[in-house]
Image (cartoon, rainbow, N blue to C red; front, side, top):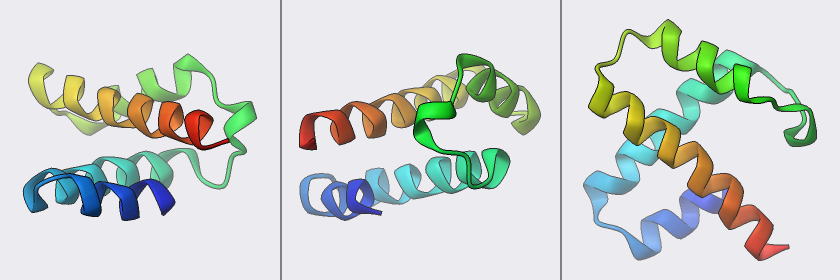
Length: 75
């Protein structure tokens, strides 16, 4: 949620909306798993389950990675 709040502040509305769509989809897939328990296969399986095209899948993976990197930077 903090990442999305930041996204609203620093991105265009369309970008923020897509961040929310991708991250909500990922959270719906992995459930209440702790971040420290996430593995690459969780993202791979999530992407495979969506039926998205290559470009959308790349954007979605990038959003998850950006969110995690932002969280590390924020401490």
